[in-house]
Image (cartoon, rainbow, N blue to C red; front, side, top):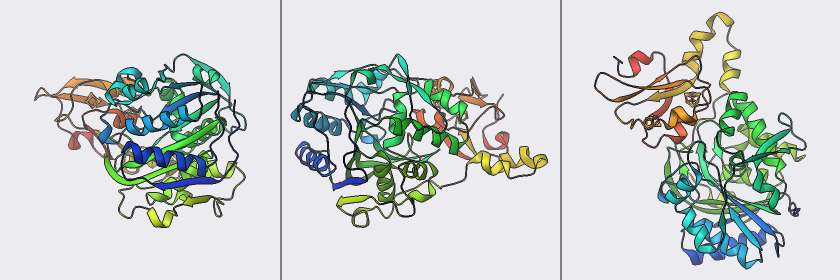
Length: 391
Ligand code: SF4
Ligand code: SF4
């Protein structure tokens, strides 16, 4: 296993305007050198792109296949002896999703191998606050270095998703849903993410921020031409910087604060060396962000007990289902950790999702993976009034 925290706090921030292979090769190499990429001569590498679900590259849901291809070329050039690439979408077959996203072709063309993340194997998480060990993809045991390739996106539950959140994909399949059920509170869920992310110490990240996702990320937002590539061996510092590049104040995103503070740094004075570009030179001015919000359970806990059921309806954003767009694919039912959903038909013959609001933990996994844009998020006082009446 490689030790890669050679330059903690060092984040490479490069302008890269397109997925043109020449431009990518040059920027990947420069960013790696700037951020202190380790010597990988003869080493075994596991590459982890973001493969949330089967989606076309231009939708910005997944890491772009040209970005993956450029990093693979770089790794071969630096002397890797074996490169494995994989991810584990929440409910879909990983290979089918990788084919749809163009990533599988990029992997095979480069001479790397595609790997399955099943089965999982229990690994300790040293220094964890909440979860002392995780069942993670067993291929981790066969690699010297994890090369993390997140897509820069907004995230309905966590505000922002990048390097730390992408490593959550090392939990195979529906194990991720189990974590949502175990930690329905946003702050605790974030603590778990940091426990996991920082336990992968042999990790180097290249972030695809060339076409990022704004709005209703991570699965239903819009592509945004941000034109940035980031790299670092310090996942917490990279996420802090990337969040700033899209206009967030990372000090208001609890899991980013937690990640930075665990490295002994003061979020008020983060001590991150960003270069050669400065955040102020390249940060987006009009990126559509999601509101910071409070942890729902924290907000509801502050309300007197007698008023909680009513107030919970008013303060908590919840999924809203749109029968006119629903294709009846059942993906939301499969991924829902709380088993709160059922599929039926309404009087017009449309597919209609019924939800048990007393079971829903507002994790928004259903919203992330719906392929038909048939789920939005908002306040719902009365489902009967909001949605079309069911038979
Ligand atoms: S709401 Fe979306 S995910 Fe659920 S069944 Fe309809 S199309 Fe599929
Ligand atoms: S209905 Fe959607 S938001 Fe609610 S628990 Fe299920 S997946 Fe999560």
